[in-house]
Amino acid sequence: MSSKNITQVAVVMESCTAGAAYLPTMADENVIVRNIGTIFLAGLPLIKAAAGEVMSAEDLCGAKLYCS
Image (tube, rainbow, N blue to C red; front, side):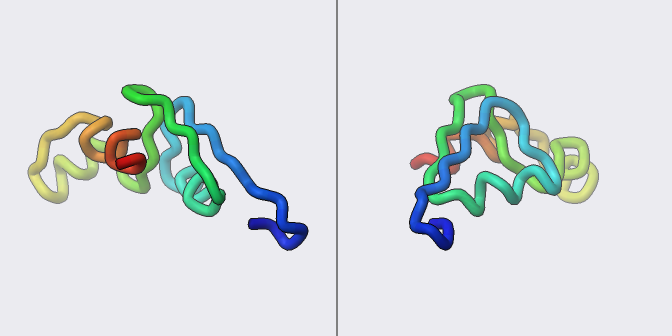
């Protein structure tokens, strides 16, 4: 909620990576498009290199994760 009590809504229609990932997390409400909208700080190649995990963007950081 802003200082003037205005609800802030973020719409995620593509990948929000690194610094852009902070914007939807600070909003009061999020609309995330299933199978397209993702929010993450580290991309899939970094996850694979660091942890050896192979996964889809939807599984790592998609709408199902944030909206369930």
